[in-house]
Length: 173
Image (cartoon, rainbow, N blue to C red):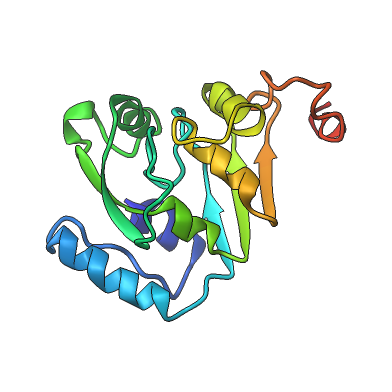
């Protein structure tokens, strides 16, 4: 799906995809973890899921593991989001598990850039930016990184308290 929807459409020439369908997922996690450990990551591009996930770190996310990649169970909200975003035709096609970069590994990137559009993400954005930092709001861990930029549209920012984010207000006018 990433090849079809992103790589081919943008002309990205060099890429590394995780083969979780035909290969042994534990072997994939081990191999890509070793590869990643030998190369620093300059920038991580993220979204924030409807349930607050980053990568596929659904709530409650494991904030403690130092493993670069992990195998995670996808919750129903995340799985339904995959259908809603047309990655899959129906819920029966969405896997129950996925290979995900861990939250701690994401934080090792020198810079993190997240793009979070749409009203379906508004509650997750509010939890990320205004709630406590913790595993039940996985994206909240982004607030612990010194170099994060989160792009919101008016809809995804609609539940934010303007008094807490006055510097953001002109961007959404």
